[in-house]
Image 1: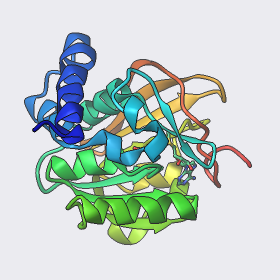
Image 2: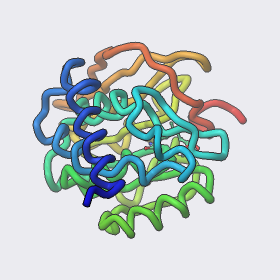
Image 3: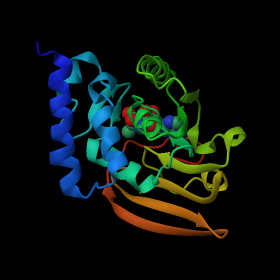
Image 4: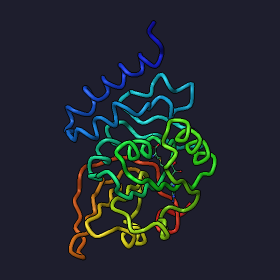
Length: 218
Ligand code: SAM
């Protein structure tokens, strides 16, 4: 007999085929992670039916889970290899952290809102992603004790690239971050190679604000 989980699996496959592949998400490992992680579990129960729609959704506390395509694009830009140490700023629902864990990364994630972090931690444990390390605090300061990171992903819009995050990036590392104004930003990838930093602009995007010492004031 067909279960609701079977229906969600069909929707997940459709999300990959209709929203991700046609827009240039072509890393097979990234696509496999999106086929595996049950996005509907990261939403409040009354929103689960919309989990695989092509837009961001509310997760409570005035915050959002990003559009599947944006999560996939940022993940692809991170070029995660198994065993990479990666830092996420903005745990939110925990979905992006699960995708990174599914790719075999050692994941550290920081969220400023304690209730979101707590809920995500419980869910990640329940889904078998219990190795993800969570912290409540100002992610613009990074996680110095766990640095350097092969990848850093900021899932909130910043006025500029936070200095501490650049400092915590490993040689050869990638920092993926939306930078710009309060209403819209550019997604950029900062790479550290040979001691030099290069910056690539990927596309325009819209994120909730990154609040903190090296972000926006409250
Ligand atoms: N990555 C999340 C997911 O997969 O559901 C979506 C993140 S949501 C678009 C942005 C998150 O960044 C919010 O939960 C917000 O509270 C958090 N945030 C904003 N400023 C922050 C900061 N300085 N440190 C940590 N988290 C922050």
